[in-house]
Length: 61
Ligand code: HEM
Image (cartoon, rainbow, N blue to C red; front, side, top):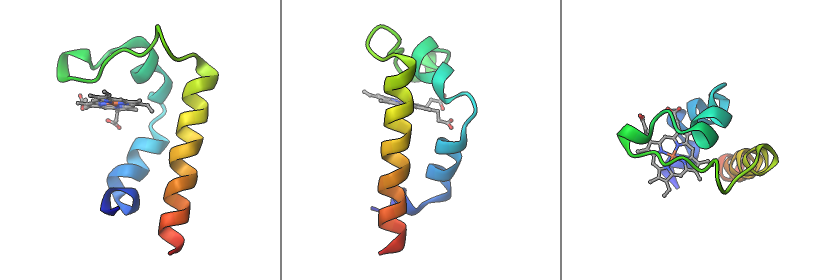
């Protein structure tokens, strides 16, 4: 669970390009797929909130 407590996760979650990275695919050349055909804006917001809430729970333990 170390990643859930890490600074890397915080950076990941506050990335203002989160939606674009997941749905437009600018980092496909580095191995991050384009999920635009599968996930809408709401789906990505839900995922981001889910990850954030899990991290909050782990951090409080
Ligand atoms: C098979 C699934 C996935 C693979 C193999 C994958 C792989 C990667 C890789 C290799 C990067 C680093 C790219 C770079 O630094 O240039 C990355 C970044 C990222 N991925 Fe994924 N990813 C996956 C699924 C997802 C999902 C489901 C989400 C959304 C919840 C997501 C969100 C992101 C974001 C926001 C970044 C940028 C992080 C940052 O630099 O702050 N990825 N991914």
